[in-house]
Image (cartoon, rainbow, N blue to C red; front, side, top):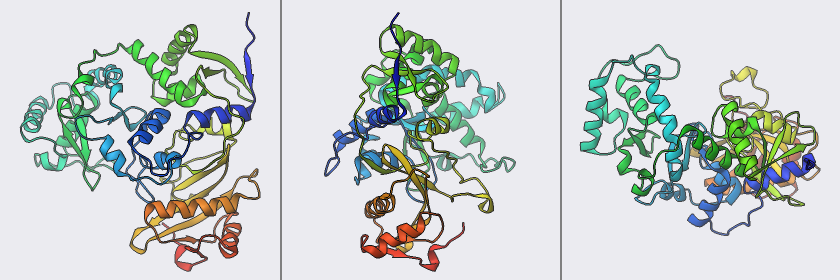
Length: 417
């Protein structure tokens, strides 16, 4: 009986970061080819409406490619040869268009659960009317299509009209697809045949079991090494479904069972995973980056306890409102609460915190990364506030000769949201 391979924790971290694209060579000017390579690593780009710094789907690309023209994503998500489309893949996310057939079983499941949106026989007339209207007028927002019916006020955070709820249902079931978003981040819905390439729509739907195998295969490639729970979470399938797919992939030789130091769960190594001796990453990670979005995995790999605090009352926040982990080498060594103050062209560092294992060069490396981020965002200066145990060292770096756009201890940086 073959011996199960053992991996040290540093090896597992380097495998995971390499799988996510942090060992790929940098390009001076990222192109659509660079985008394709990066998307092949991450698999999906989670979409989120929070825009305090930069919208979530743009950040993982920046963390891996460096400063790039965000129009690359628009180009990839439009036209007859579009590369990506939005769907509920991880959660709301851009995914490669070729994943559409693997999502059809999910669409069928949502269709069977129509009661989540409407009573079984409710809204049939509205459904037909909306599909006919979109077929005639083209891609449209809910606001443009709204039938004027009263909006419900009884659900926190959303006041959707029946039109908006029906559009959401039709999108989840694949009767409609997302063509684009407006400058206000509103969705424009259209018929799938006007959004997706015909070659994608002509592919037969995968069965649920076939889809689970394909999704676990892609998750394993993006993770490099992972537990069954990690693999299930990546495309949000049930752990039991993932285990069946894992067994099939192990039997096919695509996954290898391994033991990872200090992990309590069995792990699986993708056959194409690389085990580099060193990863020299330096990146700020969005709260919705695949490296950290599964919090248990983040703790197991990086000894990094992380909770997003956007929805926590201000007085109860520990680190801040929009906090980004700072990756240096193969460790997460700190975190910063950032805000792009666009009217004044300033990147506000509202707090900065070091991890216990942070090396001496953390402040200097973070200062350089913040300057790079500010440049990409078109902001003229970085304002370092006083909050956090890393803030004094970061301020000292600015005084010692960090990029000249750094400003230290400005009172207006001490904002409370």
